[in-house]
Image 1 (cartoon, rainbow, N blue to C red):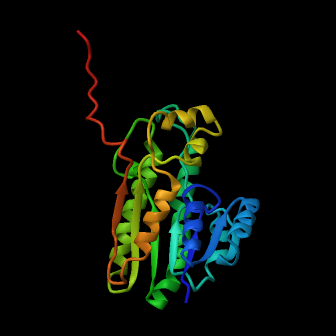
Image 2: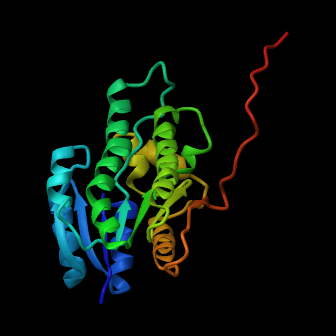
Image 3: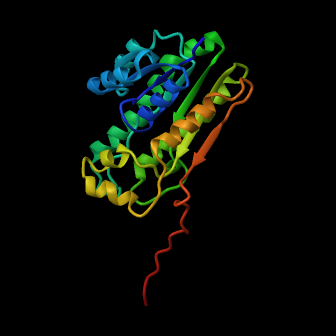
Length: 248
């Protein structure tokens, strides 16, 4: 019997690549996103693999519980919906951008987990895979609240594992580094030149890389829990500690 994966933010980037990859492997898909047209295109592309499409903004708690709370057949919940906005220093950032990141990356993720997890616990089977970020562990200028939201994803994933001890429900935090997708275009609010500059001269991860990793995580033997994976392209690494030196 085919397994079912619920993918949030399935209309682009990692979510879309995961939908395509899991469909190729014979899984059934429940796909959510804010853009109905893109969901419909994906359903047409992937055919019978798509069990259901759900237009959904994860920031809307009532909508999440209404549309996801009744789903009882989810083998994997892939919490992919998320975003970064801006690279301004903390004292210049638009507070609305901070709130949008918190509402999406933290609260939206919480809503989806809380809506879907009870059925997994009742069945004593399931897997929550959260898309975090290396920004949750390693700070960089302008990362401020985005990094904070992904640190939350990392710690919530750990605490879920603690809560679920004794059950067969698994939890994983997957933390990608630099990856080329719509992510930077969204971060810079449609400024293609600024987005392209992020990847200039480098060989970043691509969504298909993440899809393969997610599939590998989801298909480990039932007694194995992959707690966390952090993945970067070879062209990315940690920098030295920053030191400000006053001349004179």
